[in-house]
Amino acid sequence: MRRAWLGVIVLVGYGASLWANFPGHFSPDSLWQLTQGRLGVYNEWHPPAMAWLLGLADRLTPGAPLFIVFDGAIFFGGLLAFATLEERPRLFALPVLALVVASPLVLIYQGMVWKDVLFADVSVAAFAALAWAARVWTMHARRSALLIVAFTLFALAGLTRQSGWVAPVCGAAALFAIGLMAQSPKGAARGVALRSLTRALLAIFLVGLVAGVAAWSLAARDDGRPETARQIVRLQVFDLAGATRADPSLDLSILRRQAPLQERFIRKEAAPVWSADSADNLLKLPMASLVFMRPDPAVGRQWRALVLGRPDLYARVRSNVFAATLMASTAHQCPAIFTGVDSGNPVLLEGAGLKARYDAKDAWDEDYETTFLETPVFSHLCYGGVLIALLIWIAVDIARGDRRPELAAVAAMEGSAVLFAASFLVISSACDYRYLYFLDVAAMVGLVHRASTPSSHGHARRRRSATLASRPY
Image (tube, rainbow, N blue to C red; front, top):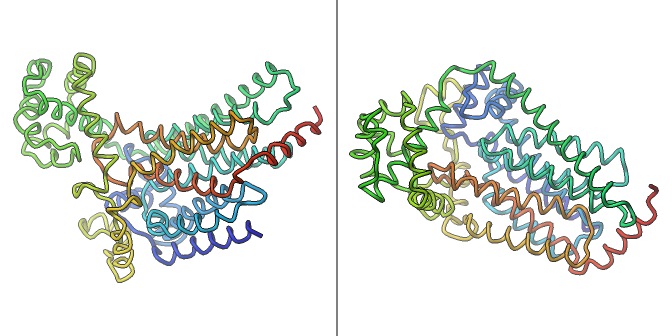
């Protein structure tokens, strides 16, 4: 009965999210990717998989409103799957789940057409399918079907975000652990480990193969713009400018000899206005177009000299940038919310086939989100702490003898979110709140699962042991 009530809460939350957001919120990035999807010509920097999905949704219904229907279904389905892993969820799970679906990070953010939201949703659903595969491990047909779903979604996750490969790698590690935890204690340990490792390696190989073929197919429709090279140079210039601001005497001799214009730009223009919040202000400087539009290899050589020659200074700069990303909602320079359809670029609007929009419903959405901006609801730091606590809790459960294999999938989701966030210690050049959205939703989904789990696992352990003991080998 409680599972049914959990289902009702999720269904109501999904419906409320669609009501609040339909036909979707489109920022400039969203419009650019929808335009690419409509044309079937993609840019290498914004992962083409997102643009392809938007183009598909646009062909079904102009303006791609079906995209948020699809994206939301993936997330809410994964949320329900985690909430109902237990046969008899605790009553406490009901209010916790209700609070999660009422959070602006779920109710409103699910309507934002961003690759960050898609990546988070697909990752949660993939780990949910993996957890249920572990839950029904002895039912081979169901297990196989769920594993296919899980690793298909993992492939999409890897295609959706530049550092998204942390999700399928953690999924494969979880599959290895599940194989160990789901086997009979009487089985030969070496044979079980070998089978589990083979299964995990095969899964990650197939994910890589599928994702590789998809990436190759989409790359054949590349627009030819070297946006990835430009973004890499932007990050390197950003780091060099931050290091020069922290230490004005920093040696930039490589640039002085090989690219004096870049050296002058970094020292005279970029360093004085450098801010850990974002590299965007550097793009508005007088010489910016000369530096960023024509990437010079000397910038990369100077950046490597900084990393290898002054690792302390590099670490200090990156720590400041990561701290700004982690504390995004408290800084005015860091965008946290967006509603409506952006009106700033008529060319993008025309390409996407949309009209600028900011109606009464968009205003309500924005007001609802703004109410929570300076609270723990919008705090990556808070959600990161929750995830670490949940991981420790699972480790303690396992150490006490809890052998439920689905715990490996839950822990892998939580761990992958922490690792994904940690990747921004190296790659972040702006502090947009959406970048670490996966961290937040993984923490919320993890809390729902923990709330539904009985406080004492003795009965669950006995049930699992009895099942394993009766399993034929």
